[in-house]
Length: 451
Image (cartoon, rainbow, N blue to C red; front, top):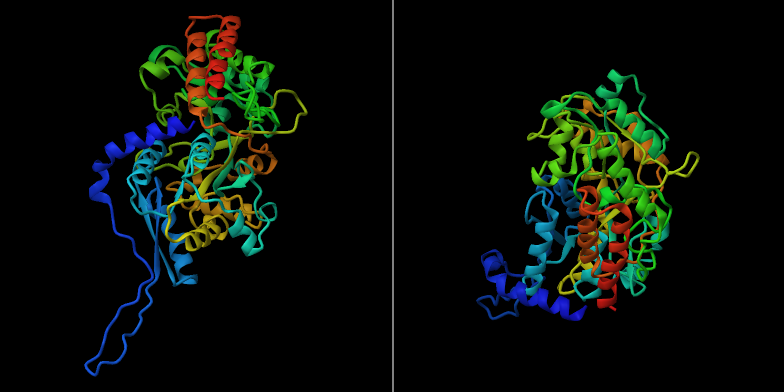
């Protein structure tokens, strides 16, 4: 693992010259020496500490929270820098380069458990346990979404929060005489998809759309209360013996090949179909997706909303099961190289609590008013009337999230290998039994190589 991180940093240092022009000096609390004409001792002028916050959301998302924080804490100024707007993966690559080249920054956000665990394990993040203890804060009393620990240390506070759900074109459901589900199974989802599929050829409307991410090959697993991933929650053993992994692949395959009710996977990957386009152009009626699509359901300047979107909870595997879903909160972290760690922690505590409401995003703060949060999100969209609030509140209220698993630093390698085997199955290169055999063999090799 250390060798892998060393190679990442070496490559980053080589590429860091690309970012050199963006590098800024560090602002510190400083003393300005000014001797007067009579030779009196110099005087001190204390300037606000400035911390740099890196992310990928537009500045307008975080600025209201930053303004409110600065008003309460005039001794701290926060500069937010969106690195690659609306592209979290590319932004994180830039953060790695900036860290490797020694550029000053203090806090940033990450987009996944694998992205977090790799950077926590390799010393890029500041442990927060002592800061929480000094403040007298018990994490479980403040937040409703647990964050992953590494070596029993806490390195993050929860950012924008929410479960995955099913986004639905309510207008299409109304045309088909189907109610918005409030509690359903994957069999119900499959039946809905068949009833919502209309037409043929280029003008066909599919009842469901699945994107190319690994999440769309783990559908049934995401309904489980534990062991939802490619590896078990212990971060040691492969999860391929879990029958829900095989069932997830078969569900995806059967809906496309037998029911012909989901967008063909070959089209998704060869035509690089954007999932937003497929949904908003009404070519895919239902779409499993994450909480970032709540605000987008009200339309954006690039993709306006022309129909009402509703929300349904993640389907269960069996009728009567508790409703679980994949999801959590983006990790908010402090750089281990920050020169203003106390101030950085103070800002993240604010942002992860009352500040998150001001960003028009859901928070993991237990004291937040869910109805108010939803109203704030909906009212901030271009077309609030295109979001079905009742179904959204129900979905957020009934959905449970599991305790985060232990995520290994090589999780991205496992994901890529899993997707490769799933590709072969969905595209007809291997049958399901061979696919499961290959998953067990090839992914285990990756685990063994990283022990």
